[in-house]
Image (cartoon, rainbow, N blue to C red; front, side, top):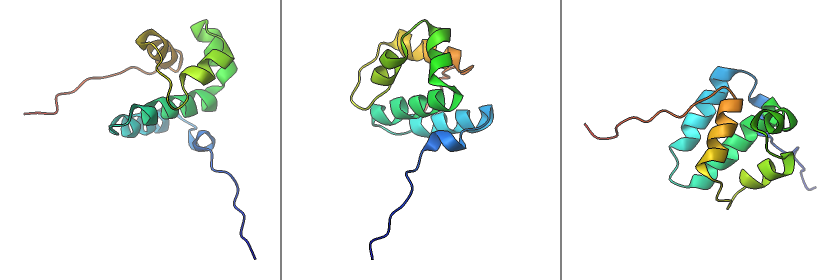
Length: 96
């Protein structure tokens, strides 16, 4: 008998600002930039992609495309999405 599983969607568990920020911080640690883009997409989906599109002035389909694996969005796009989410990037030194 073959087992089937329900699809896992991280957006279903991103229900408060602190969880979203921690999720994005963990994704930013990965060397693969697609991981962070996907995480930003998950957070945007959790908040409502239509509302994020409205707040950024970008099309909803454009946001899905910009935040997909392999995409190369402009920094302005990523920054606009983060601002619409009420989040910001923080840079810290990795060397003493």
